[in-house]
Image 1 (tube, rainbow, N blue to C red):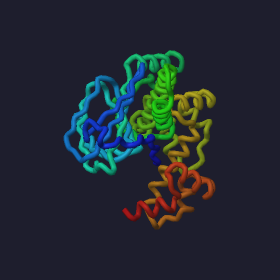
Image 2: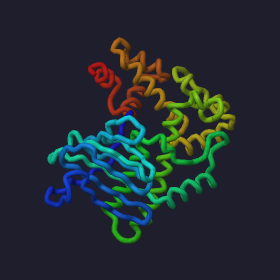
Image 3: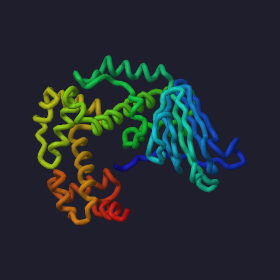
Length: 308
C-alpha cells in the first residue's frame, strides 16, 4: 500500500551542527518533545535511548534499525517506529551524506497524556464486547504510515514550525491525543489483518474480518457481516469505525486492492480479469481506487513487480 510521508525540515548548514551523526534539535511542549535528528555522514552502531514512550518517523534517507530481541530492518520514509521507555536502539546509517542527510523525528510523549487518552476512550467509547480494550500494543512497533496517522504527525510538525505563544502547547496536546487514537486504530488494523484467523473464535471483530477476507471475490452482504460480530448493522458500523479508523466499506475496498496486488504479480493475468476476480464491478472504479491506494495504476503496478 501507499506510504504517506512526514514533512521534512530544511537541512541545517554544516557550520551550525554540533555533530554530523544524529545532530539533535529539540522543540519542547508541556506534554511532549519533538526532536529532529539529522545525520550527514555514514555511521554504524549508533546507540539512542529515550526515557519516555516515543514515536519516531523517518523523513528522508535510510536507517538500519537493530532493536533488542528483534531482527534488524531497513527503516525508510513513510514508516514509523514506536518504542517503550528505556528501549535501546542501535542504528546504522549506510547512505547518509552531506548532500543527502538522513532526517528522522522522535516524538517523546508523557505518560500522563497517554494514560488520560486511553482512560477516556475506555470510559466513554469502550470497544464492543470481546473486541478488547483501548491500548497501545508494543509488539506492533514498525508501522507503514497511513493517511490518518501521517496527517496528525504532520499537523504537530506544522504547529511546531509556525505557531507562537502559549496556545501552541494546547494545540499540540489536542493533536497529540488524536495522534494516539490514530496510532491505536492503525495497530488494530495491523493486528486483525495478520491474526484474524487465530482470533476469530474468541473475538467477534476478528470473526467479521475473517468473513470479509473469505468473501472478498464476491458480493459481501453488510447485514450478514454485522451478524458475524453479533451486532446490529448500525452498532457494528459505529464500533468498527471507532476501532479500526475506517468504515467496513473502506476496509473491504483496501482488502480488495491487496488481493488485486497479489493477482497482478502475474503478467499472464489481464487487468480486467484481476478487476472482477477481486470483487470489483467495473474496471473504471477498480483502476481509480487502485491508484488512490497504491499510487500507481494496476498496469503500472503489474509492470513494476514483474521487473523486480
